[in-house]
Image (cartoon, rainbow, N blue to C red; front, side, top):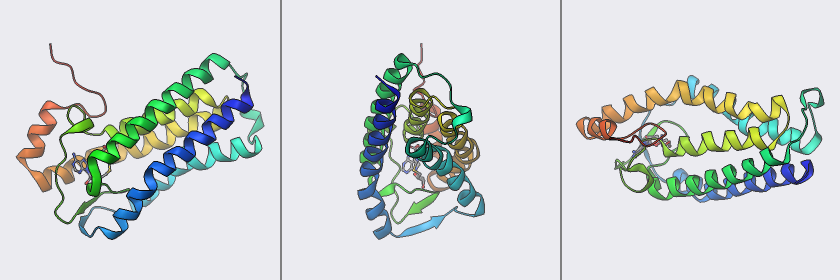
Length: 195
Ligand code: SAH
């Protein structure tokens, strides 16, 4: 593994990530929203997350900027990053499949929104965010640059920490005890193991 290959793997997997999402974006445009908690905060958070996970690594892969933040490339880390990225892609696909028409890029409830608690949602309430965390970790492992590598963790981390409690409030509001029970038996981004 060389640096160029690591960059190419990152770019290819990023394209795969996007391809997984396209059909869901199309369907979301056709699915009426019954209630939305989108606001200025969501727009800012989505922009920060996009900058960290998409824009900065893209500029780095395409141009090598910002060079001053480079550190020595380590093939073993890049191999690990490739594996984590593949796991992220698989999980990303499975979460979209399970959520179906209930998915939104922001905080929306769709018409006849259904609470999904099966598939990858059985043990974890936010497996799509788990997939994004894995993606951000893969980015850090694949790109040996303090800015382009770590910006995914910072960018997505910001979205995650500001959004997740708000999303759970929205779900509790909409689904009441059904979501309360679901919260009691699941973990946020990692399965909870009981003894
Ligand atoms: N946080 C989830 C979903 C991300 S998509 C995850 O990480 O997997 C965001 C949208 O999904 C929000 O509009 C919210 O209304 C919806 N949502 C979140 N959890 C859901 C669930 N268990 N069932 C159905 N819709 C859900």
